[in-house]
Image (cartoon, rainbow, N blue to C red; front, side, top):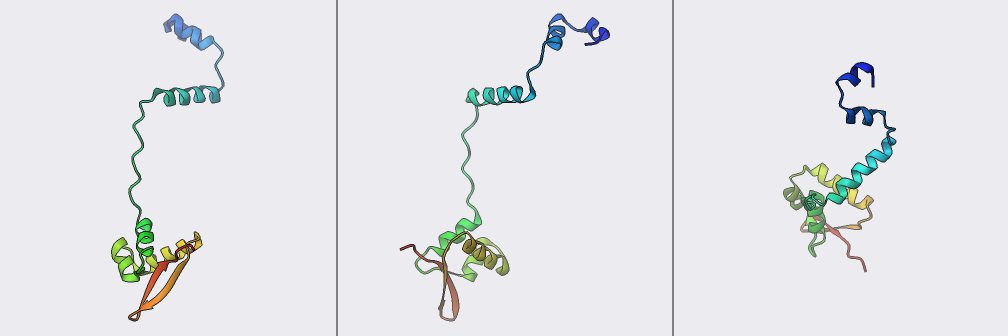
Length: 112
């Protein structure tokens, strides 16, 4: 501290300023440990259901789901719904297509 600052500072402030500081990482880790040990954190809230989860539930039904059903459930446009099906395929879901009364029905194949 400068002489001018020393004149208005209390003795504890001067000693704290002159004491060697811990490295930044150690100070940060100490604060993190204090906050974890406090135990005052509220329990995590459950994640709200996602639309893609609704799509998966519909596709796992025995009858599967048509594109209009998926659109109604999610509120997505047709091209977005088809893109979601493609995304599920890329994530490893086996999605089968069948035709019922001239309408394409999509379903997730059951693992044997």
